[in-house]
Length: 252
Image: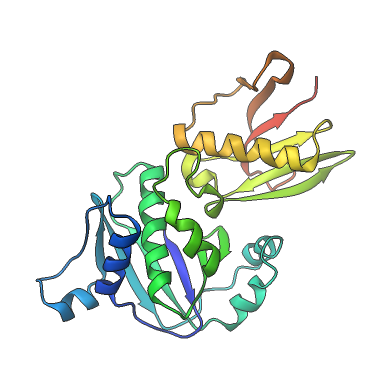
């Protein structure tokens, strides 16, 4: 989950201040800045301990590479996103070290650290999560407080987009970002549900997969009752350039 905190102007975080905020926001965590104990070393340390994991923070005095698709997706829910992308002049790279953590554990820890960084840096203007999802800094600051909330209340909507589309006379929704957790996105097409109900279905399935992993296998059915059973197929999307998806349809 290598993520980027966009800054209006280049700046270096005071990591000792970030640690204090992180400890105040998440007192259940073991939190410390790595250093030899000297205040100046701690302030300049690129590493912060968040629970049992280490998170690295690097300051970069340049804007991030432009990704037209990313900002087109972001604009559907964040109208100012393209202006933020155009004006920012620096960014922070935030990444959990090591490869042993479960995706949800890594996402929670990284989310908490990003929230604490934003709280100490007024120049923060946005976050790009795992190269796929962009959100405003204000939303991230508030919602990241729930990084360690129990399922399903942790802020998984910071980690993925749910985007609508049309498929002939039907409507559909596709995720972007779920594959970082379970190697596939969800593509759900319906002739029965309203758009709001469709989004609720996709959000619920996304949260379930983030929590439990790829427990829905090719050919399984999902749904709360026999009349709502929906078959899930592993396939590559025709509509989205061969994207690996959990393909869901509520056709009888």
